[in-house]
Image (cartoon, rainbow, N blue to C red):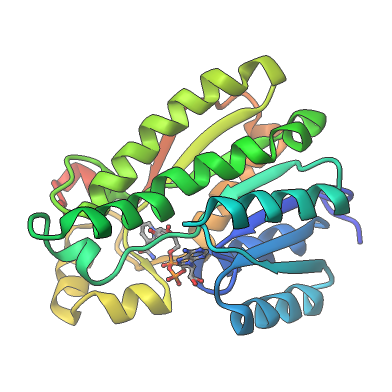
Length: 253
Ligand SMILES: NC(=O)c1ccc[n+]([C@@H]2O[C@H](COP(=O)([O-])OP(=O)(O)OC[C@H]3O[C@@H](n4cnc5c(N)ncnc54)[C@H](O)[C@@H]3O)[C@@H](O)[C@H]2O)c1
């Protein structure tokens, strides 16, 4: 297949649904071979079929981003398949339920799990894939959130720490000419976000946005395409908001 990512390998975690699926399609339809990782195998089977229907190729692996052994095994399998990884999209994340409701009363075990999936896992996977990212002079794109700015929930805290990791990883990876950036979406219309956010809050948030339409998964995937493309290659060590202007209006979660 021809396209700007022809011959490139793009790893997408959380590729079974939502934003991850949109990223898989955006890169796959532009020629990349997409490698999916998730804990939800049926969703990955669907994503692979959609990428193939769009003319691309994809493979998938079950990988729990909270488990270092699984992360390392996944990275080894990816590198056996492809010694170069051009783009790593650390997209898998916990965002609904307790992580987004309260702050106190969660206890150490839950905090550790939230951090393991949302913050430490992305860093460990980038570290494990480092030889392949270095071989490609690739880019790591961490999926943050607008909730990372002045966070009031465990979710926002894990994503704020991911932003710090993004800056630190860019410093660490600079010697390999690997870039590390983040995307902080606003509220985007994915099935999980639709389920997890009450209808009145959707309306309130839409009302706060300066751009008067609902953000979509494709808005975020398009930003990742830009950041991974030659046109975006001077952007590094930054987390970029894509929220229709919501943050400026003082949205907090
Ligand atoms: N949709 C939004 O409005 C929005 C806004 C800001 C940030 N985000 C972030 O974007 C990412 C994707 O969000 P989404 O709306 O597509 O959600 P989603 O729930 O549809 O997708 C998340 C994916 O991550 C996978 N996952 C969860 N835990 C995992 C684990 N331990 N190991 C491997 N995979 C795991 C899930 O199975 C799922 O396929 C998340 O990191 C989320 O925090 C989403």
